[in-house]
Image 1 (cartoon, one colour):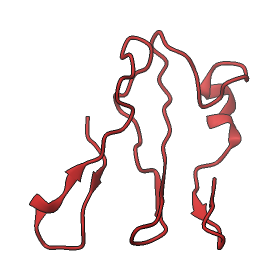
Image 2 (cartoon, rainbow, N blue to C red; image 1 turned 60 degrees about the vertical axis):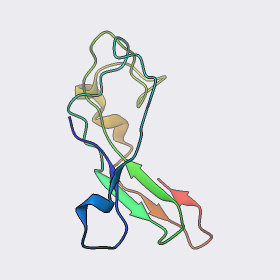
Image 3 (tube, rainbow, N blue to C red; image 1 turned 90 degrees about the vertical axis):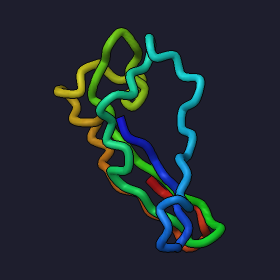
Length: 96
């Protein structure tokens, strides 16, 4: 299904490694298939933080988390109208 990889600035593909995300999640409650991992990815630069923003619009016997507390149904609320952007503020805190 894909993955998020971290790579140093070298020409060697073998220098990259897969970043573990959501390990230990029960696949019966939360589907990880067909996510838009990396819809928006921002970095603070070397040694800094990263933020990865993604969307899921599939509910298969699990729970809606992205729109938790709102009526279910992504087609009714278009990702809860929260937008899909990420950025870091000058004080090095991320803002979604």
